[in-house]
Length: 370
Image 1 (cartoon, rainbow, N blue to C red):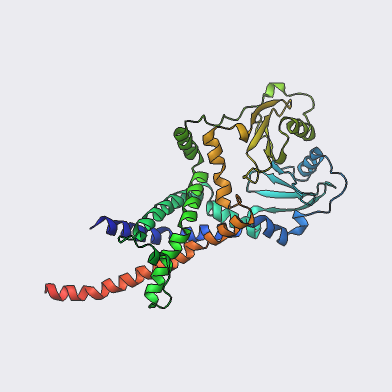
Image 2: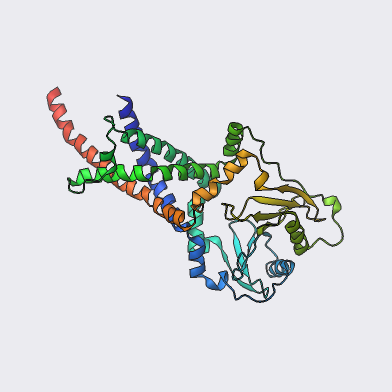
């Protein structure tokens, strides 16, 4: 068996083995490119409000939610980024109960569990196959296999005679089997660069610690510092309000606040997340860690002064969801998510035709032997 035939078999059977997984991941990813717009369209009563002159305090919003859901624990608060946007408070974990609050009246507008909405269910399917950490790891290995398929696909496409143009065209007037082959080959090549980056960034998001270690080693960068801890010994008396802590964070980093991470336990800090203008990441990669008991600033992560390895890793998520170039790259990413379906369909037909051909040749070989 030649090396090219071995690569061809590896490419073919890897595609057949994980093709359905990649199709599910691709199609769900395409839908999630415009997730916020879809959610606003389906549930405007949760996502939008009428702007007024002044917002209620963030502390009162949190207390309203805590009073309404005493058995649940608020962990994340999305800060409105436009005058029309509402607060989103996530309870218990990042994928459990979502609460929407009007920033001007403090009134709870609605609630839902993530899996109970169309986009929420699709997001869970895309990120963890509805199976938690196990599904996330499966998707991570699927992304790594997709990287291998992209590389093997280019090797198989590369013409031995150095005539590249025929491999980029589809001869629509040819017999249907040739058209099917051309569509498979051309689709893979035209979309291959984007698919490769999508697969690499997807794997890095799943195996983030490994990706960070590799990038830091390659760039000889220092790793991100470990999150600091709050000091329970300072507990006692009244706790600082969220509004006061947020005001303090604004003085340290004058950027848009996107999320607040509330303490998960007695020693965890409160985390204020911020985004600079022009930053690719939709939520920003600036973090201010504050003692939950005193409000003291414990640590600041500024994306502008982060090590090279961290800055490279920070670009992977924006690349993965296609926001680095605005609407244009989001549309491209939407289209790229559909390509695995085309490749699986055309590749499956090629495999089936090859299988039928081999079956018809078997009796002839047998008759020769006898």
